Length: 271
Length: 304
Image 1 (cartoon, rainbow over the protein chains, first blue to last red):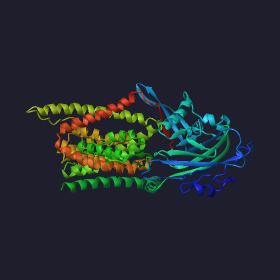
Image 2: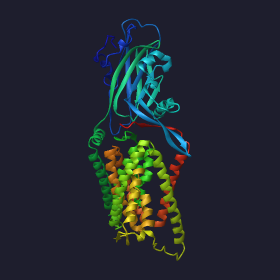
Image 3: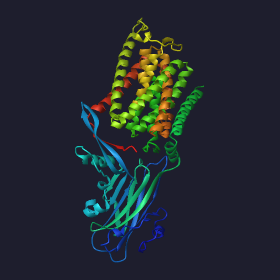
Image 4: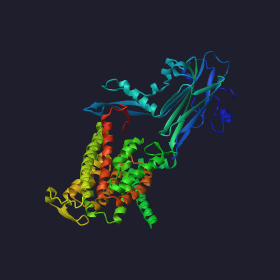
């Protein structure tokens, strides 16, 4: 990897080809740290920045690969890397069941204003060991910052609703944290694998790569990942949204045709 | 191997869905019930979002019923005239049921009311059916058991009498219409075809002969489910055609198998089996209502 300031897309691609598409189209957020002397920069690439949901989609894996470029000898302090991929945020209604006359029913409901549909975090170590509290707040790294609730309303223990979102989505495999998921080689090269589950929702996903020295963020790279349905999936979904009556009639016709066809087939086979 | 469903936005094992469809198909052909009372909970249990499960269930039921209707049609076991009266009631009831459903949805209590109606209706119908058919089985076992006499009740005193030749009945059109309407309401609220309540109502309330009951109820279910499919596609965009087709591929063959098994079993035996199945589902749903759930919280997207 040739260390050159703001390495253009082509430089790492030569080596990362054939799988690499350069991630770092967006400029690094160096201006966020005016007090830090920019002696180190991170260059990162994703194995894919387009994920196609096809009919046989069974999840995917994004391979994040990067290098640390230096103009000068490396500064002192512990070097760490955090890789984050977040799905599009959505608003959720979270309900809590209570027992009423022996039967469990939904009682309290709370609106969680923002929760990513997917969130994966990989780092070179446990988040609290590699990232300072202030920089965590500044960059909003970690699932705790991603699930946000503005006003819970009059319910007992409103934070329980927010925690429930995180817990349920962790269990479902939509929120993943891998504290040792980034492998750092010779303080220069790093790699991370992030798995996308099969039930992923389409939208614009954002990948961020953080470079840290002594628990402070010294450089950031961002990249967009577009997750889209393609082919039959896209066609069906578009039709159902834009021409719902036609779609309903087609679904029904298809179902009736299948019923009639099979009935005829079985009759033919019996003869 | 997995297939990603475009509307449900989940990835499923196609073999599981095909098997589910086949199971429901056997029930459909065997008992004349659409099987929705079993399909909807099973789909939700497999991870399909409830709204999609209900709407796609209706789509599947329409297709599966057609092959069942055709099998019965060839045996001249469909009373078209009775079916038309039931259907008129069904469409009216379904429109009412959709309104009830959306009102409950705003209150966030759809889940509870669906469960409660499952327990009440499946429990009531299944219990009655079990008692009645067990009694019939015992009587049939004795030689020279007395034939059930034709009952004359308030049903026969109503106006608007019609002749239903295939059923060998001359009765008022009001009871079949009301039965159809009740089934329509239930199908919209519970996401079922409604055969489990229509079949016993046709036998015990209207007094139809058992041999035309199954075909006629399938006839009504097919049209009501078809209307429900289009309504759900327009209102909620929750019909997953890919899921429905997979369920059907398994289901249509299951329905043929069920119709064949059905010709070899006695009506009383069929009813005992159906009653046992209905009671089992009722117990399961009831248990979930009362037992302390593992997870008290649930997430739903905010409606746009």
